[in-house]
Every structure is written in C-alpha cells, then in structure tokens.
Image 1 (cartoon, helix red, strand yellow):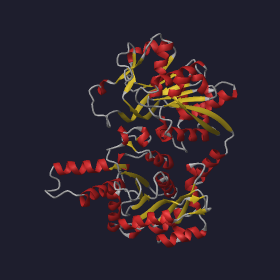
Image 2 (image 1 turned 90 degrees about the vertical axis):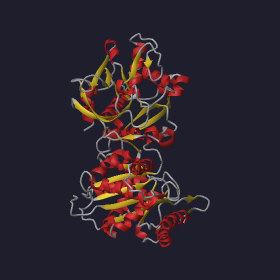
Image 3 (image 1 turned 90 degrees about the horizontal axis):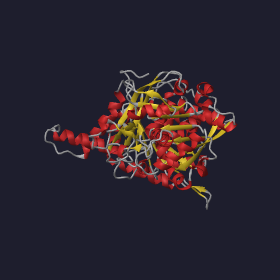
Length: 554
C-alpha cells in the first residue's frame, strides 16, 4: 500500500518496570493488526548489548538464536515478528549496540568524520536513526515501521537508542511518530488492589529522557477497571482510552484480538492518520478457535540439554502449537533432560510419550542421552523428528547399533573416533572466529521422489534455514543405507545430507536444517504437522498412517 508520495509512519515500543513483559509479542500483535488493515508493515528489534549478534551467546543467557533467510543470527523476538505477520524479515530488522559502535568506529578509522570528535550524540544516534530509516525504505517504502527498544527504561545500555528515537520524533511531523510504552500493573493479593505506582514511575523515567508516551499498554494479571485506567491516564498524561490492558492469556496468539477489543488499532489509525481498510481477523480468529478447542490430545517429548530455559526452544514450542491447530489436537510437551536419560535410562522418561523430538545444540554435554533416546524410539516404533544435532544423533545411533561401527561419533564430540560419521565441513576447518561463521540461512534441498519427506512437503524442491558446522560424513553413506537409512534430502549437488528417514519405521525423519524457523500459525511446518499426526495415530494404537499426513496439514 505504500508509495513514494507517502511518508512512512514510525511506532516506537518501549518497556518499563521489569524485563520480560512481552514487548516482542506486543509489537508483533500491533504489526498483525495494522497488516490486517491492508498496510505494509516492518518490524525492528534494537538490542542494547555489545555483542554484534546473539550467535555466540549461551542459550541460558539469551534464549534461542533466530536465523533469517539471509543468514542473520537475530534475537528470538524476530521469530515472533515472522510468526505473527507471516512474512520473512532480513538483517535490517535487528540491530545491536555492537553493530552500531562497530560501524561508527570503522567509519572513524577510514576518516569518515573528517577529524571530528566522535561522540554518542550525534554520531551513535545518527547511525541508529539511519538504520531505522534504511529498514523503512528497503526493499521499498513501508507504510509503518514498528521499532522495539530492548531492555527497560532506566538501563544505561539502552539510552542511545531512546535518544535516537526522541530525535526522530523531532525530525518527523507529529502524525508520523507514535510512542507506545509497555509497563506492569501488579496485583497485590494482601490488599486486593492493582497498583499503578510502578507504571507512574516508569512513565516519569521515560519523560525525563524527553519522550512522552502516547499509548500505555499495561501488563496485568487482572482486568483494569475504568477507575484504574482514569488514574493511570491522569498521572501519566494520556487519555484513559489510551490505557490498554494486556491481561495474561492462555495463548500469545489471543493478544491481537484483545488489543482490538481495547480499540488499540483504531487509536493508532487515528493518531497516525493512516489511510487503510477495516480490520479483518476472521482467519486469525478461526485459528484461535481451533487452538482452544482441540478434539484430540497427544504427548510429545522434547529431549534436549537446555530445557531449564524454555526460551532456548521457543520456535520449536510454537511450531507444535501450529501443528496442533492443523491436526485439531492439543500438544502437551514433555521437557526431558538428555542428561537424565543418561542417568536413569530412556524407559523411565520416554515410555509415556506419543512422539519425540530431538532438537539442535552444541557441545558434548548430554549427547549420549540423546543417542539413547533415539535408539529407544527407533526400536519401539515411536514417531520421531530430529533437528540438526537430532539428525546427527540419529546417524550416530544407527551407525553404532546397526552398522557395526562401534564407537561411531561426531568429530565435534570425539576427535579421535575411528568412525567419524559426522564430521566438520571442509570449508569450516580453518575458521577460528566463532561469530557468524557457520552454515547459516536458507539453502535449497532436493527431495527423493516417493519418500516420506516428499509426501510431507508435497514437493521435490524446498528451501530451509540452517545453523550448523558439522555434516554427515559421505564416506559412511553406503554403510548406513545398507542398514535401512534413506537419505531423502540432499543439497542440489548431492554432496550434503539434508534429510534422513527410516523406511522400516512408521515415522522416523530428521533434518539438518531447522524447520521450526519457518513455521507460522497460519502456515504450520509440514515436518511438525506430520509428527503430531503420527503421534495421534501411535496413541490410537492403529500405527502411523503416513499417507494421511500431507492431507492433515492443509
């Protein structure tokens, strides 16, 4: 809907009181509402940490790394952006303090500032503003750009970003910028009251920086009464109708509907003077109805090493929500520590599940537990999906227990193994830098005709996102094929293994890529849809009807 005669509108989302209030989900919900009105929308996450990107961070520190088609390693909120809006973003949508300072320093070293003293203002803030405007114009002008500022108002790290958006509001007309501030309104059980003081202090801190919030989104466990909204509005200098409640919901996908009920999208259209059509959330509402009213239930185990921090597997958890909707099923996830499987044996933890997923990861901790889990589900015909490291564990397990390659392993875990069935890619051998040096982003894959993968995708050519260094060693392909492993997905040149499956098993499939990064609630990923369908069949005692799996995803 955008054209070069119309200026892009900017919506800035900030947060206060405490972290982890859900700014990313709120920004995604706002984006969905505006897109559903026919507007072109882009989102950006500004992360104040000094890391260039989260690619080298421990998942316990930052949660999962969300990889885009272009190979960018980004914040997990980019996953929410893509899932809610159903569109792909690029590296322009995630900037960090590390990226900003690096660009400014490189320009200074090249003489780009003509001898000036380089300072936070204006040089750092100008770089931030230029990145925001670059996103607004590429690949073509957008109607609305939503910019989420990471961290909490009052953090030292986020001050340059807040100053940059304050300046942008001065440089743009009033109708082209909008500030939305997300805060917490806690409920005190002892007094039976919702307390507005934290919100008042948060807005005060924002105003001291020079930013006046236009709309307040108030996260709360209880509905905000009219009196509470009036009180917040009075002390925070916004009209009561601009105080939007954000009540804890059963599903994050209900938030856009709640925001619309609060007339948030109408308010934004009014403030920004947007020319757009009426809202249409009919398909979204239908999806939510199926999500909340499943006819079936299945229990699927996730055997990983980071299960103490669920955000490390955020996209996987959401992909099961999407696949459940496609199958009219509620998916109950069992979070299983691979180290506990090593300690207790797989029977104790896996005997009650209807399906198993082994996700990606790095390092040798918990690997033997994952391999034992794969062996258990293979032998007991329990539906299985392996992702990245999960595929590698499946290869190692079959090599050890069926191909007679005792001690087979990945050279990542045992550099002296006699049978490195998983090995480093040739182009990775001389790399010493860890950041951004893996096989990253979208790559094509050719699927074998008639395979399970073919039936799931209903296509022989696909593109999926990668994040890994190690590959299946082609020297052992023939030996593994003799044991029933089918290499059903390969790189176009046939050199790299992308997918494996076992024809002797009702549903045993794994991918070197990360399918969870492309699953959306309105377009669930076929590998997850297939696993949930297979788990339903396994639970019913009928076995897995693989011929019905593709149909179930439509």
